[in-house]
Length: 208
Image 1 (tube, one colour):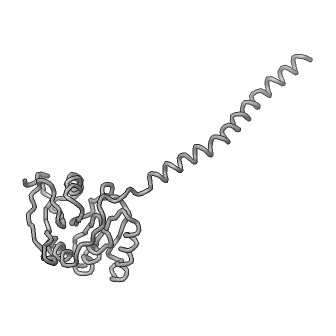
Image 2 (image 1 turned 180 degrees about the vertical axis):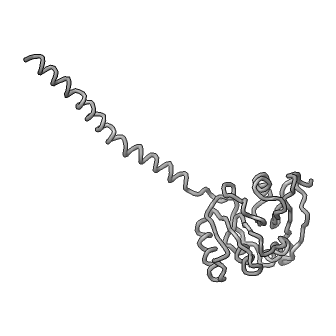
Image 3 (image 1 turned 30 degrees about the vertical axis):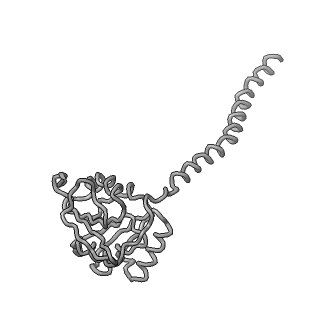
């Protein structure tokens, strides 16, 4: 009589252990999933813009696009595109495809509305993204209105991802010791703005 009762207790013991394990897992799993969800939400949160948004004057936009020497085969990327005026105007005036990358979702929405009103939504795309993380390999022209410091920090990425012959056009700010091919002054009020142009070299070596 003793033997069978002992055997029954031994057989039930694994079931008790399994039940305890399942109970602990049920209690712990929601907390783990919550932590993972929090990490995902934090990772997706956009960081603050590197510079304040200041619109490029229309006459400077026109000069930047002239200096880019756009053709219908070009694809223009505007880094820090704000209200989208450069991509929208490029599509309007030159019929090129254009991409604007902007970290501020409110400005992205404004840019999309501006493209819709201009009738170029089929040519222009705006992305809420980080200019340091976005893939630029599809661009043949890149336009910038950022800062000397940001331009310099972007330079390795631009040289790495843009194909030889791609043009980089910057409003007012240089690329460190990379000498621009052209620097064009644009009258603005009682002062002037400057448009700088570089071409990505075939051998990766920049002119200094």
